[in-house]
Length: 527
Ligand SMILES: [Zn+2]
Image 1 (cartoon, rainbow, N blue to C red):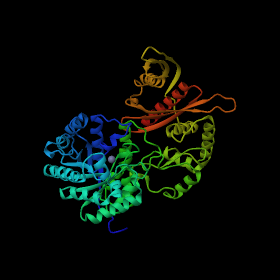
Image 2 (image 1 turned 180 degrees about the vertical axis):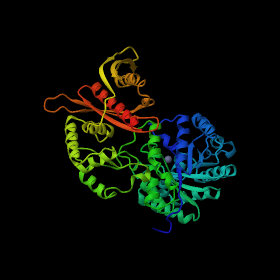
Image 3 (image 1 turned 120 degrees about the vertical axis):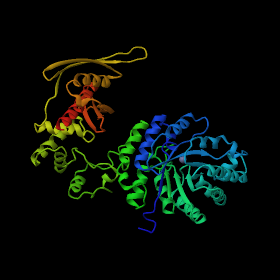
Image 4 (image 1 turned 60 degrees about the vertical axis):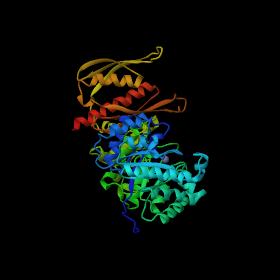
């Protein structure tokens, strides 16, 4: 470790500004407030809340409401552009908009690429220097910190390094607290980032250098680290790398890389264990499915399937992992599949708190193999696996019995309601319920809950959060089967997944739904 290790790196989150530019993302004001609180609980140094330009009603409303947030750690930052060509800063709607957010600190972006100055701004290089200097000085008089985002810095530096540095100098001399070098188009290579950042560092000793990268060449995280290696101490990015086009630098990867791998100080270390939770929270508010294979926070990030790996991991934790998943709040998963060995199943017995030996493990492997041939998959359905194992060991109970269900799918003009009528036997009584939903799964779920809630209050607040259907190819003349995976969640945030397989999609849904409910009842009866 070099002399810079343990140096503090400020983490500047722009999930709510640059990160909301992703084409499939649209946050409401309340979404933004909820995310801001979550980012604060993680301990981000700065949260860029938005671009409160006059006319941007949503971001204006956000900053107004955000004044009531009790942020314990983070400082909220308003973002905006420098003044227009030929304008007086005091007359600039752009700068007035930024001030209207009433944040302690602000971030202004300006042009550093001479080509953009002449071709896009359509002005001369001198006027751009005045634009940057006057805008920064205007803000510095009115706000505590002014961050200067040097737009297209790396591209500009390649074209005309002298001019790019002159713009930085104008910003610095006008009072900018950090010079944030942006790879706006995301096309730079790590070696180019290193070279240019080192030149800036030489030209501005003692100034905080920042880095803001985009992922168009899949290098946003690597390029941020390259800049840090050359002395950048302020890193901008977004949760899950959300952002325009291919996204921004992913803070969920950057933070553990900087802290756990490279030894820098970023967020408080125990806060880093909240990363997985925050990553999944932001994905759910954005209404996007987080990739299972997302480094650090994905459900498969520390999942092991190959029997050899599992065997080794049980003997020597860490032997097939780059780090302890608990450090980022994730968990190791040993997957039960037909590749899994006895050791993995024995481990499952421990997880499920079941007293069973190697003979039973062998039998369960046989059972899992047989079910996998039928189309079941337990890798993503631990709850169904636990129920399967318990049934096999005679350690399960029946909570209710299905007598019949009837599903009525109808199409009327604009609405396509589905009606389900359901007959169950619960505690010696026959329950008959009818429910309507926007599809068969939803309607079955409603009817099932309606019948069971009076008997089992533990089901209150349980909801379906994800639903995946996969058609499995028919083999040897058999018709195709459908596999349904359902993810459920209870109000305390516990999530579990169940699986159902059948030729009939509704039957497959029913099986997964029933297992979801049985699992919840089994867990709550243990408490
Ligand atoms: Zn950007």
